[in-house]
Image 1 (cartoon, rainbow, N blue to C red):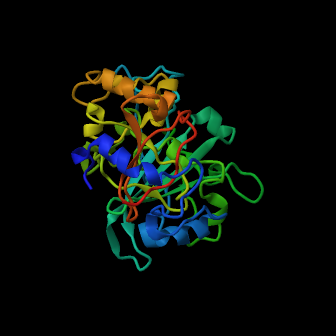
Image 2 (cartoon, rainbow, N blue to C red; image 1 turned 120 degrees about the vertical axis):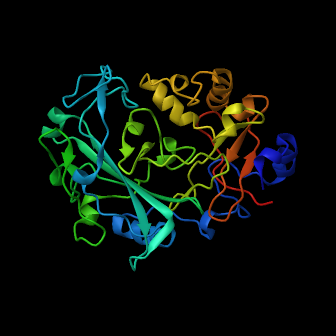
Image 3 (cartoon, rainbow, N blue to C red; image 1 turned 90 degrees about the horizontal axis):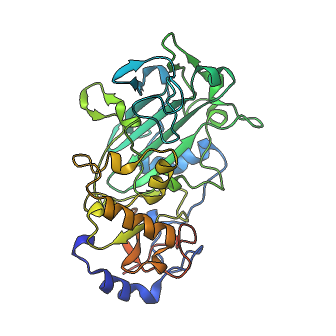
Length: 348
């Protein structure tokens, strides 16, 4: 079903009788992957759950990743210049030197390639000073671009039997993170990684697709093609997207028929609010070839997100396709702004 060919009003009317209540999964809801799932307790259990969808998680070796460069007035620096003192700060406004990222092709348990799957791992530096105090983190994301299946793993905070990523890492002579973490076949995999915790939904930031882009992280380019960021940049408003273990997660994005921002991708309004909170202004780099030219369309989507589709004429919620489920446009209800959001997908 092509959203561009659909009338918003017609779809809303057709689905009105089968809406999924906020915070619940209706009995007739289409469940991505065919089975309702919640996150298991350990990384190895989660890896087994993810295996049929995105294959085997990669082994993270930070030293082999591509550095995310920090520039001041166009010149790369290897000492953190200070908060907002670089050309392209991260989403928190930081200019920390040392982060690395890598794109890894998917593979099945027998080692055969999975052409539709890509993994990205990310070693995030908080700078040399904070690294010495034990602050750093590692995340990895697996994504199947055909089915939309996505898995999120992260390093823990070191509580209990878990081990902080810092225990495996060091900083090299240039101040870049290096070091190898246990892979999925290692005894310490469950100490080095965890699945998303029960009170965390990764889609709060990774809202419209698996990979969150901004000028900072897109500074890391593929060695084989410097014109392309390491972080995959597939742009398609109809691309499938769902989270293994997160079939109850809130996947909504605002939908306004005719809004030009939605010609290229779904509306990542929670992500945008995150960036704007760090003074990374989205209209300063989007759309790519004409930054700021769609500021009115962008503002309309943000208003719908903040106030709720139920309080914004002409705006509804869009739930993406994925895992065998069609995309759905769900009319808003009063008081559904930036929080109380239907989580299910409805059938035809």
